[in-house]
Image (tube, rainbow over all chains, first blue to last red; front, top):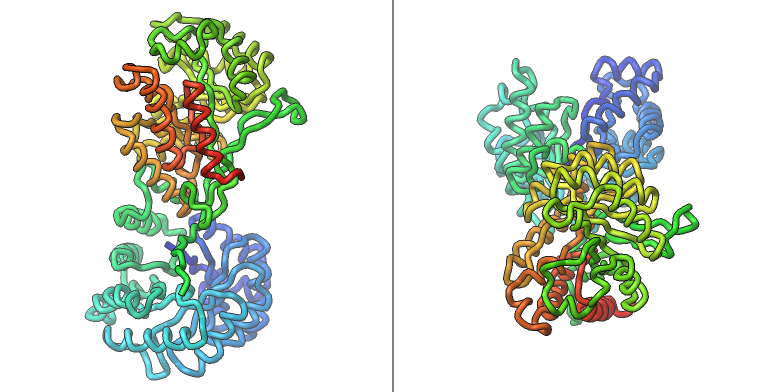
Length: 262
Length: 312
């Protein structure tokens, strides 16, 4: 599966201050550590407190791609910040993210096409967070339809069912997992699916265990990608083992190591 | 409307392994052999590049084989007793591309030739013929661990392909192959999980996956050919989907297995046919190097490969 490392985010204290001081060593260290831990791509988010997100996004992209050629997921709710990142980007791009709002789809889908980027679509809209599976599917269908209309390759679309914290919305988690399975049958070829994993354990006291248990259940539902902390090696081991059990990797005694060699 | 083929898109390719080093590279082979590098399943040319044809290695022994059937003895006659003459006949008369020297005579039960004797033979062979070389131990682990390092050193930098490393005995050979610049054959008993594990163990010793050739162990027609086929197919599918630990070319000991079949021993023609059919099936399963015995079977398979590759 596609593992997107989540650690370059201005909301984390080390990244926030490195961004403020333009300390590229700290950013590059974080990028390299995530790649070494098995990240296939890196999320890049300036953080909520950032005053100049356009120039900061460009700076982050430039310093990260000095040390890795992995794809970067440009993470912002503002299309102009994403476009600033795309302009600076030489590596492959992932746009994180578009919502099921017509005006956003009208801007970001063409941008994804122009830069040959993959696109993450959140099943959320200006009306708010969906409350059940049907609402998620409806929002997903809106995104898929907009992509199809604009001839964006559906296999490059990653739908995110919006994972909610288990201590806030326990009753919805099962719906979220089922949505992953049902997103795949919206169109042929199928869109891909993704989750922002850490949200599921927000505010709980055993975050790592909840993260990896949810991830394994989501993988069993056909999840294609996740934004997560790749330095959590128990989490990575659980993901690799879940894929092994689904016959996506060939078993050998050192299968954990084999996966990391790829 | 014209029919449109559904083509599979693959994300990875098989590693390229180079056997032999030419004079330009400071060594003495007339040509080098490259195998692997496929970006598609066998013979599906429309799905991805298949830059190298399968190659055939003539199997020669360091000692006259005692149990070879009449068909093979007739094909080589007295040369069987003289490995260097045997090798030269394969090179000159049969236009071999590659030789596979089996050091059967080192086996404690079949002559117990010493490491020095075998090393000397390999040096002489390298002088006598300028073809790239595959070298195969006698299969007795402790004897192979004495003989193969000496042989590796005698052929230093000639970039031979040397085997067989097995799961319980790979360290000595891998270290020697690494030190003297050769490639290694990793043998697993028709078991994809062990094939993968062994490749990881060997690459952990510092030998890159680009210097490993998988011997999946095969059975001849009627003796488990379909098991070998499905193991090879599964490994290749994993390799093309990005599993580098299985993305190595295959070597198949076709002659050894085919001529063990009781049907092959009954009359000359059926033995040759057995070797041809086994080889042809393994080409379909993705074999990169076929180690074969009978010159007539080899010539037929060579022509078959040329036809499959449309003169490419």
